[in-house]
Length: 314
Image (cartoon, rainbow, N blue to C red; front, side):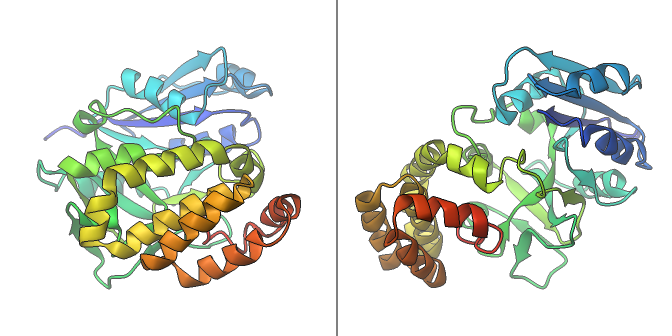
């Protein structure tokens, strides 16, 4: 590919008036200039729409305004249909590129890949410098094939990716399951490999309550998280048991945790026992046992107050 590939940056935005200008400065300041920024306002109730409409002016920006709030995954699906790039990057409205060369470095990595690779993924750090990604391999970069890419034996956590548009067009973000992007990713990993490069490319903002991983938002969506996790277990149980039993135990633990936050004590205890019998995370199981023996209101209150300290649990 002699020309510089066009990069589509897709950003769902909901009530992002405090962050959206900063995110644009991060994009505009990139040394790689051949991009389109597709920003989808998902029915914001604050001044996000006015800021996007009047303040963000650049021919590379495509603005889409949705009447009703339908969630980030719906907005991403809208963006996928509109994008024209050779490669796609998903950057939320409150997040930033790690440095001014991030897009260039991401492009450098993905153009080297073969047809069996769908994307290249990179670690994510928070604004305070904490790492949301873990790797259990000393190599600076490595290939991950199926089924290791759904077992996550060498990596775990959140990652920032650049994906081939030809692959993106085959997929759909799960609108009906809040926070369960793994349903999409794992479908992709059944057919394609990925490359992991151990160099941060994105700064994640988890410091505000509008963030979808905030404790308050997670509590509102535990029913959807439970359903999505059950679906993942149904699809991949046999693969996990055969290849990575510990991963099966970990997802059973997540399911038990979401059930516990809904007050489904009986179901949660039974699922937790299955997790323990399948090499589930021992420390996390101990924490959940302690949560299960206290009243549901106190349980949910402690989750909100201590969420940052026990983020490893869910």
